[in-house]
Image (cartoon, rainbow, N blue to C red; front, top):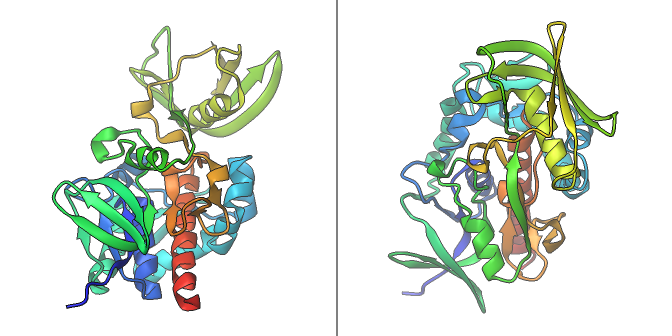
Length: 349
């Protein structure tokens, strides 16, 4: 019997990995998904407190502008090929009923993240795309005709590999940095990992309370450098919500470590100023800042420049955006572009 390689090994069964598998199914690309946990998409099921804000009803250009540089330039080809409207239409075609919020955020009508995951899972089951669960990948070895994908108990020969293992926040969901370690082991540069879209500690705790419309502002040397309107929530740990998360992300990405700044929170006629606030730890962050360096990856294909056949998608990359559906949109779009490149390479062969 002649042994043939798997056309595409997908490492990671989260948002990017499952979406990549769905695209592979639609494009007729044979794929095998490896997922280290017992069930796929554990972190996706937690998104937006279990409601799963899977994209936003805005043009791709607006979403890219909200992400800022260098993400906007890197992700432009991916998000223009799969803009938010196409993401929404794709899920609707799988039978997902969609609910639009006033600010454009899109949720499943049930407000249950499981419905988004099931939409992808049903397609994979119908197309017979296998998912190996409880199956962490322990190493990738480039060989003459592809890669050897190693696990604890067996190895698989694959023509192409897509690494979609996510970041390192909420490690109990399986996001433990596998993909970043694989990239580094193969000689790719990985930028430092830190918390993104997380809350701040409060020196003086407040009574738990939620404000639907607040404005967060990052102030440096007396000037407002960034602002974002959204929810604000005081809890026992400190202060959270989109108005806080997006200010924290901007400060973490744009200010040097130790540089003095303040975050002003305006709500209900009151303004609270946090000076040099302390963010919540990385393990609690919504996204991981940092990852596989963008100059290592071709933004038109999501392929590693140095290693033919190796692709990356989603949060394993140094790619992130603000709250409101951006990060799942980036995961879906980069995953689609990677699989499209694998399919196109097969057609050219």
